[in-house]
Length: 286
Image (cartoon, rainbow, N blue to C red; front, side):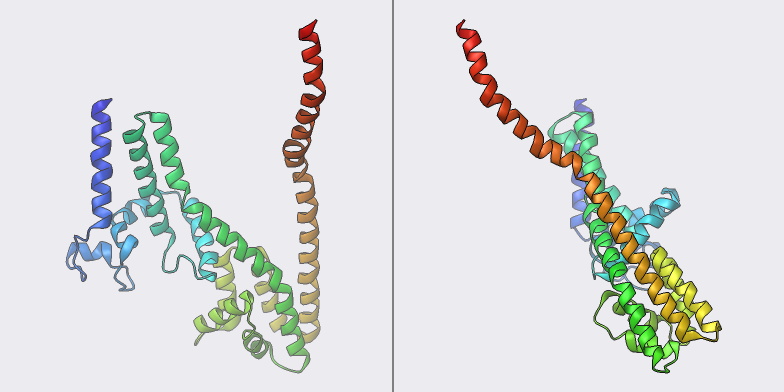
């Protein structure tokens, strides 16, 4: 056991030294450049550079579904200007490194495998919890702003404006949907706008956005575009209201258990202590 503790301490110390000191030059060459320089030619820096040797094993051995979920969360975190330039492989490498560090720290401090595993689990989950919370917040904000955005596009088309021009004008809105639309317009230079919206919608994995982009393709091919856009705006607004009501009902049912645990049980214990303690004293006196 002592030898395992020493080996774990040495491994953790080596990991800390590796991640804090700079062994590679600023412009890597040879085989090292294949790891530290992505395909787009951008040289990695900071944590991404230090953890880059883990990227290839992570991309090979981590399940594709796990990486896809991380990629979706990072997509929405990027909408809030968080974790910029990180991809799903780099973020998973960071989680694995922190898991190893947490396990090693637990072995050095407690010498108990159970506590070490808990430390490794905490290290693995620590980056994902705040990033996932950020992604959920911006995803919900996007869904809440989507009906208004589509209604603005419909209002623009009612003034005899084409769909593409209406989308470009509405993209100037200072909202999360407007920011997303400006990104789509930037990526659609020389491409079809609706097709680019569909590609970005698939990247977001947001059902509401995927459905809207598909409906826009049908509306563009139709004849009564203004009426169809108005119907789409009403449908998205109705779906959002219905989902909001369902969430409100679900929250109400979920609050029953916390209310019982944090309000009713302390109240019951207090009442029993006030009433039961004199009874116990009287019985003891007898």
